[in-house]
Image 1: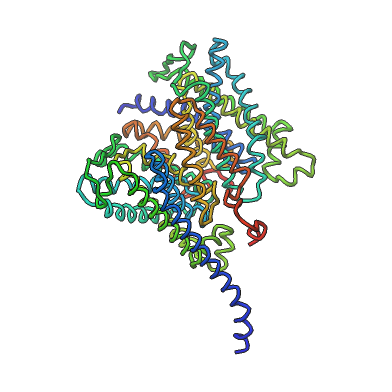
Image 2: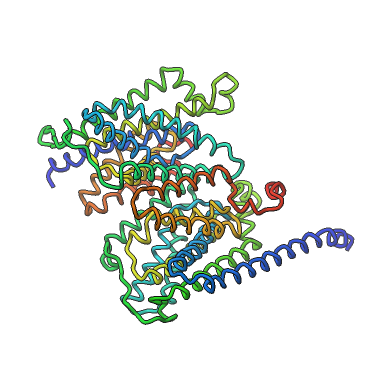
Length: 292
Length: 340
């Protein structure tokens, strides 16, 4: 193993890690806001990929240009999922935790069904794009262009999220609501509105990830599952609710996955990530940066 | 002396009423089991018999999950691991070494219970979602390992050889009825174990752990040991169910016994019917499994996704509309229940 090859693996791992972080951060944001784990998160990603695919079919524009549209669509989708399902799941008078898990699971299966109904179970891919199939050479390291753009988009999204959370009234309302849901009502913040927008924002972030993923990954109704599992692991590894914990954990997950794939057969590449998750939570039961 | 006379008359009617309720529960259960046992006399269609077998099997498996998830409140989403161990232990022992599935079933059960204890040691320190995600992750690791382990068939799986109909090998090529009675027997055993546990020290401990682990601990409940016991019992019966499934379908591969879908299928009936109840998992399975099978046969074949839409929509609606489970529809005094 040369140094060159190792650098290659590390660079691809980091890029993929940035994309994992972008997929996971919406999940973490929503959890931090209201202690709800969205078990349809993978299906949100899948919806975004199909939205990119559908818009591409309609407009024949390059999918990277369609990313803002897909993100906006997912914002509405997330807000609707909150108003239609999650809001009711939070109001039940028994087994609240269990109801949240299974209501969002039901939603996940329903979305899969709808995707299959409109797009069939076939594997789709977007072809002939500006980014697809190109690689960039940098000091002897070859990196696929879509992943580079994906990584940059992720960095930009985290930067934007930081500004949103620290500089805007909405960000302050978000932070206040996650600190104390009861007290915010007293200062005139509409909790329900913050939750709706929070779900919109969380879904928009995974929507952005989906729009990027659609440029280089196969699209099918079950595509969300494996990525959702990685997102849960990333979020739990970083600590539920910690936005920048999700970024750090995403990078770690990307690196560990790339290194595992280098040492073990590719089929086993996820074992490294799963083992890392178990090792971390067994030592620190609330993840690396968790506030629990 | 005076204390005893004061206390005894007050306590006795309560205990009597409780004992009478338990007797009534047993009597009702006996009637239901007898009625179900008569079903093959009415249902001659092989497809429907197949649905009945699966319904009873998932009722038993969901009741096993319910012991840990419902009574003890530890939401495992990785029980496919134990199901897979039961299926694989039985298949390897039978196909490779010619050992009877009855023995393999016990081996799988003991292996699973032992593994549940070993995994419970670190996992039960995790709370809420950290615990549930750990169970998913561990089951996925198991799936990946089996997938890449050639001794147990790897990705190809294990095909049971054709053998003549016999209870010794649990092989019945053309007849579903023996499987029906085996699955019913399994359900009755798991139901009865749950019934016994409900009124045992463990049963009370588990409910205390579920409702408020800190308070339970301060009152002297051995929280950790309680969870370990629940995990072992639950894993044992899940593995027995896996062994039965392997014998029933006579062919297993990692995808057909160890995927997340199965972990979900053990939890869902209990959630739909009513978690932590004696009949919730059975009621949930009796609705969910026929619905899944029928929608899959009539709509799933086309790949249109309508079956998933109905299935997902049902889960969502029931979870939201009846959070205590559908069993609550049958209760005479829901208010009294809610307070107790």
